[in-house]
Length: 122
Image: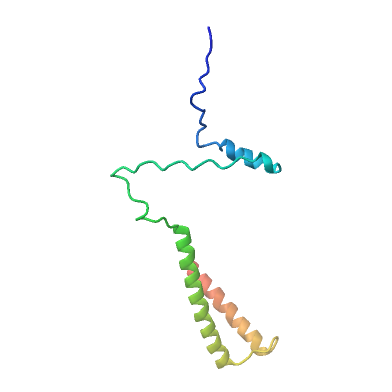
């Protein structure tokens, strides 16, 4: 019984594992003369007539799209809040810290917050 090993075709690891080139560069970076050159990229497989053309349908991220919309809405809400705040401050005037007007405004704001929260829960 003899065992023969064919070296005609190199062993290819599955895509789950990193390539030899990747492992070598990850663990031997301190030795500059021992680095290997990157292998040529694999040619893309031929597209069948039933597959979509990737250049016509660029990928986009739903998460990035949602973040951009949220940032735009946040910026718009901030502008509206600043306008309303400026109008209210112009109408009421400046409130001095720890004055009777300050405590009245805090009491009214607290009541408004508690009532709205209670009403929304019940």
